[in-house]
Length: 116
Length: 113
Image (cartoon, rainbow over the protein chains, first blue to last red):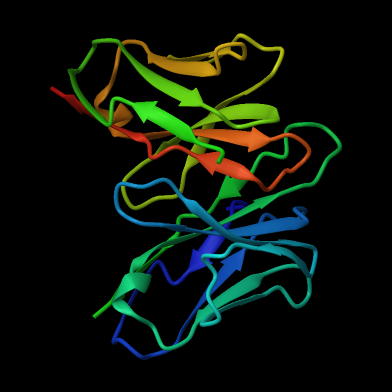
């Protein structure tokens, strides 16, 4: 399977615990994105990387959230001191930057986080 | 504020029937518009993409239209199947910013036997 993969697919944690999610993009893609999606809503942008550089962070990304892409390949998203409001689907997407208009993003299956 | 509004919020149709989903946007400057299909518990999958100069794009039983003047798009599903049950999300990209996707809230479609 050469698509975007995410791990784990589901995570249940207690409030106050730290969690870390992993995303493996399509291998030749140099851009990687993180989104959060709550029930009945469209995905909301959190952050994105071009290679290993984190180029943009949303205001939604509080200081409890941190994302890394150390070698420009896979990425991790860590949430510290989780809160019930962090319960959501966390989606990862990747794309290959081109000069054209179609920087299509390919999405992974998501990690469903439930904070009790 | 860039916004993407979709209607209806939800829709139930009988298998075999056609339906049309609507998307209005105020995103500027416009680069392209995509329709994604998202099955429950899965990530979105791209159905169509249209740039400013394109009026229509088809992908099998899915046909998307775009009116860049009125900033409206529609997704028409022909001869619906049970597997079409999903959320359909309209996504508009800001020009020259490949990451700046503006997502609608989606239309939840249920196709019943």
